[in-house]
Image (cartoon, rainbow, N blue to C red; front, side, top):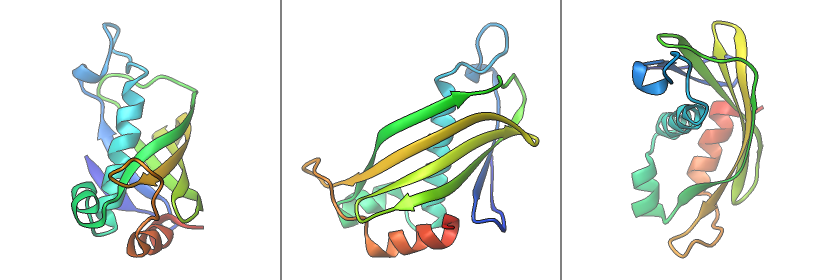
Length: 142
């Protein structure tokens, strides 16, 4: 796993494909792409100087996926090195939209548009903490 930031306001997260990620033919099982983009979002939050656990316990903030649109373009295979590139499409008080694209080298294999909503302990929409909103905009904003 490798994490870095590019100069184009994209958060980059690398992942190697292991046997456990694939089917009997060595092709990545389709649902595992959701795990890969989730890991990239978690690492992005860490790059903002916090963690999901801290947001939960200290800020009464939890993130849920409201909408997930995926376009599977090509398959990934055993031992491929993939790059999840996350960029911010839009951010509001309680939600944000991310584009999360997965590449093998420079070959686009999956396009995802994810709508994330911040909720409180009562599962009601809640304001994204200001410090986090600012850091997300700095990290991956347009």
